[in-house]
Image 1 (tube, rainbow, N blue to C red):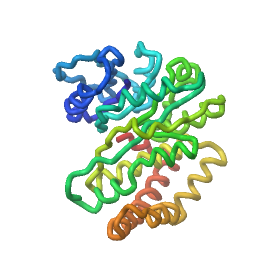
Image 2: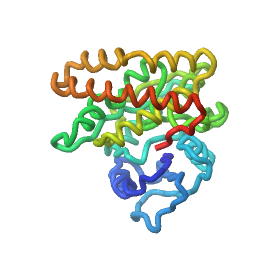
Image 3: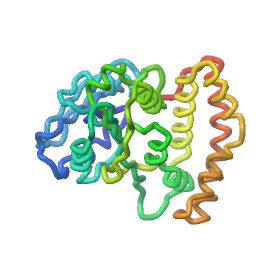
Image 4: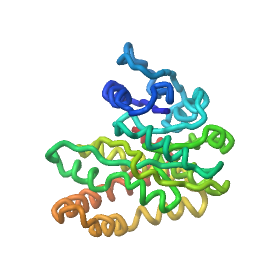
Amino acid sequence: MIIPVYQQWHYIDELLRYLELQEVSRGLFELILISNDGELPLTLRECSYRIKVEQCEKPGSYAARNRGAQLAGGEWLVFTDADCLPDPKWIAEIEKGLSNSVGKGEVFAGNIRMLKQCEFSSIYEVYDFVKGIPQEVYVSAGVAATANLIVEKSLFINSGGFDERSYSCGDFELCKRLRELGCRLLFLRLAFVCHRVRSTWPAVSTKARRIKGGQFLTSGGGGRLRVVIFTLLPPIRSILYFLRMRNVSIKHRVLAILVQLRLWGVEITELIRLIVGANPERR
């Protein structure tokens, strides 16, 4: 289990507590925390499972994940994020999926649910919760988010691992590359983690900038031109996505659309920064 940590050590104690609740043998998994901010915790919660803490000097979560993969002793690599909290049956459901595997060349993606407080604290929290991380939709398109991604170690290493050039979208790029190698991507609905929502404008806009940087940097040639055109056009696809959500109130859908329209300006500004050679956002 590999988790990169960048300015999120305050989440780790609760994450360790949730991993302690896993309904599997503690010898079944090890946790590898990769510091990507030059910091190491003075102490960690005492746990019944193995924990390694290492540093990755190269900036970026994908470089940190690659470093973790090199250190991993298991046959399978399970990727998640520092701001996620796993369901108690998470590892058990992953193990079940692996045992039902029909052979080599299968990659698995678990479910991701957004975690919020009882009441929304801001319009931005509404947006992040409603938008979510629709892993099942991603998998149907042949990609998956690293918040809940499971890859055989030998396959990961042989494929070259994550592209370390960008700070976002490297998970999609890896999945596309694995599919080109003939791998199948399978969705594990019951193996889920809960992902904290972002509740402020700086947090939501920073994430949008990071994603735009990933889209721009992982695309080349005609792909980069498509990113530019897609960014400059109004976010119609996102608006339609929100409008079609039947399990979300009309009020919350409208609020999400308003935030999306505000983020459109942020994305255009970020695109211009990247075109003139500015460094991409990594938070």
